[in-house]
Length: 508
Image (tube, rainbow, N blue to C red):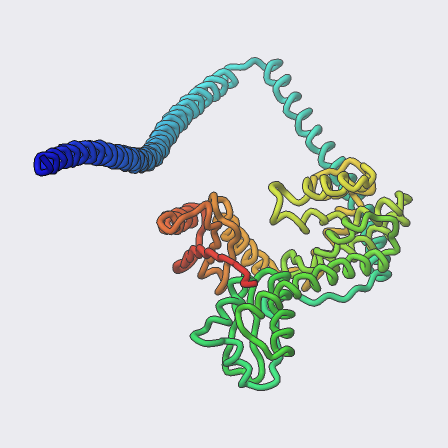
């Protein structure tokens, strides 16, 4: 009995254990399933995020490739348009040349036709003269008398006209003598000194050792000075001396003052050279204003705009046929004053007109047009009276409209015509260098140009943003070609185009 109970209990225990094991295993299987599904969800989520990231990267790369292709296409299109414009310009040039040739041919044909017409007319006149001679030979007595009387009357008219001409010449000689007497008195009362302007300035050195420092390592210092001032620095065997050469007195003065500052300071390198040149330019501006004020004081003229005085002072550094224009203007003012006093003209207008008659030459390098019109515009800008402004405009006219303008024209001629006042060859030389620089500045992208070595070299400075490294070659060729077409010169002219990119940053 007991054993049966024990066996029953054992069976119950085994059954309960089996049931409990089954239940526990089922719970573990459910939990494991949930864990696996959660991991699967995480893996799927990570895969989707990675897929999205890959798609975004691919999209960005595609956009960059498309943008790069578009930029390249735009660049190619720009180059094609540039090439097309060049071809159109060349075609237009060829068409213009063909048109010019056709025009010249047409003019030549017209001249030939005109010559033939003149020949025909001459032949016709000859035939008419022969016919008249034949007719005269068959005239009656009365007809011959009439012809003879007509010829005598014509001869008498010629004699009468000759006597009138002699009387006019006699009166003209007397008036000319009176004018000479008046001018002699005026010139004797006006005594001014002049020195012919030259194209070089001399800088004294404390020792010959300074020459090497000015030249610098591999010539970098002297090249910097020449490029920034537009002058030529000549270092030769002359002891303790260097020479600044250049056709512009303003550039020479800037270079000379800058060199003197560098020599005095002792520090000579490109950075210090730039500072010295800027300082020299400021000093020169002060000197120009002072020169204008001294000219006004010397001529006893007051009440002018300070900016007009500054422009007047610039004439100190301008020459005409070797004659300093500011000294020439002061002399013309004196002569005009004395002539106006003798002729009863307005002395104040003549005096001011004489001083400002060449004011246009102070800026004629910077403004288009002749200096008479430029001078007139400057004076009107500063509210100078019309009578004085007209003198600046009309002093080169054949017959000025006012007495004061005629007086200034005469005084200008006297000042320039006296022996030794002007040098024609020198002025032609300066004019050629000026024209050489103007040719270069006509091209787009050119910032400034300097003619050096007596016009044998032209240095052209361009703006980096307007002219790239490839275009400088074409620009140099174009400038050289234009010089060949427009100027006459001995030998050859070297054209140097300089493109400099300067980047400045500060370390703090």
